[in-house]
Length: 368
Ligand code: UDP
Image (cartoon, rainbow, N blue to C red):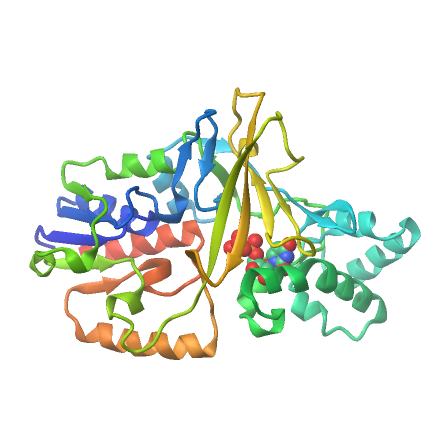
């Protein structure tokens, strides 16, 4: 590929991985970012008490993709961290996803023993069973477990998170937090898990450190006078926004994230506590639990409030949005030298590792 002038719109993890790869191959890159900071929703910073907080909600890196892990490890060391979540259910904190430990905490001892036997007779050890699948069981005992998990863990959390009933969202979404037939209390079972030892922003800044990369913050694509002069554009903003919403709006679940400092060393036993059934927020995250801090006087916590307004969060995967997306994608095909990428560009529920894998694959395709 001859050396090119490339525009990357959006300095989130997708755009930055693209910028790093193309710059390293000798292309000249301009990264535009409409916010005043890089990192997209992965942006983190040290607060006034020296604690690294995630401005747009908790991000925990986990992957089975060796290539992605090795790639990012070129820009950061990792603090080994395995995410464990507790859910506040009936006035006690129980492991989430629901697993055999949760079963023993939630049910009386004898009944739990019996239910464990039934689960192990039906499923293999380590199996992950989506709740909507378990709900279809004809077995009365399994139904009891399914009802418990659905009513106490899924129904109200999902209503808060999405403003929808679990049945009305893509099974891929509720399947992310299945029932675990094991005593593994971890939220993720991936081979590699961790938090960049100096935070995500530090890692992403390193990726942008190249004489071939210019970053322009507080700059929006449509206001860039020379935007037509680039050989290639990778657009990681919302595809419907690019087309000025002419064919309809793609709907995202948005959120507000409220950070708070509390004057105590520790606020909760684990980094994240989910509140399926109480309050307007879905979960509270305590940031010291991600990266240890020498500060033992205060701690920083964040409350996550999903809603129709706020920061653009999760794409709502349904038929209406798929139809709108296909129309925009057909329009995008008519344009030459512009590629829509990432959570907003492709309207996909990307985890960070998949977003990076996607950028690596796109780079390879273009650089062949
Ligand atoms: N979920 C739930 N209760 C929980 C945790 C998750 O009902 O305690 C459901 C909910 O529908 C949520 C989905 O599982 O949207 C995926 O959760 P996950 O934690 O993977 O979402 P993310 O990390 O993207 O916020």
